[in-house]
Length: 291
Image 1 (spheres, one colour):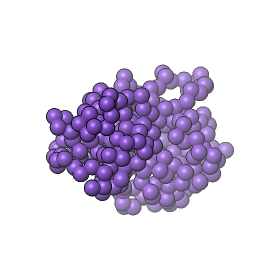
Image 2 (cartoon, rainbow, N blue to C red; image 1 turned 90 degrees about the vertical axis):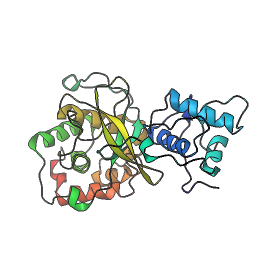
Image 3 (cartoon, rainbow, N blue to C red; image 1 turned 30 degrees about the vertical axis):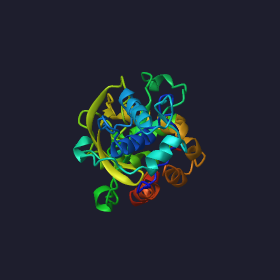
Image 4 (cartoon, rainbow, N blue to C red; image 1 turned 120 degrees about the vertical axis):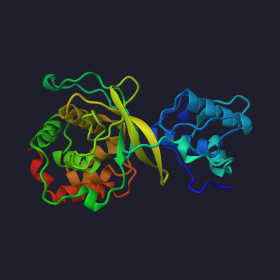
């Protein structure tokens, strides 16, 4: 029986894999739905840690996938094909996935090293993930003609001068993901929902994630920043140097084209670019782009 929504991966998941966040979360969800005998449901956290690798190996062993299970799921490989074709062994209670209140979806990003101007130097950041916001209504996110706080505008402009990401796009992402600054993980100074990696200062809260077209609820650690300005600088660095955004950067300096190019990369929401462009146009965020 084929899985209702066939899972496709952009890279390998598990031991020695690329382990992009959305790919890992997809495999974790699949494993929970096809839980091998004696296995415990995984927390869908996008982290290919020992529990995830062990459960992959357990599934491979019980289904005779290979003599020596490797604990890895490869795109187009036999383990992924078998998981997609397998009938669920049991129904996993939704309580197995931690639930709280924040909404967003992440993707793993590894920023490439880049020199930072002395005035903008920060401690070396570990890899972070940028989430997709929950699918918002226009009423939730768009307030026509609104102007962000001066400190937010300034942070977006400083980020543009440092990293080349249009302030209009950054402001639209700020408005979309944090509901104009009103929804951030408490104590995080993190309006972009940037996920924390092991060792990062963080706060823990909940998030809705869209994985292969299905919305699921997980608990995740979000990066805590010393200030809003730090968050904007980190966000700009990720978009300017992160490998997943290489093709999107080809659309620069056009803010509309860049916003569209983030769809499916920064966010899985197919309307993500349109929502950013709508916010930029409705509130004339273009006026804040640095010359």
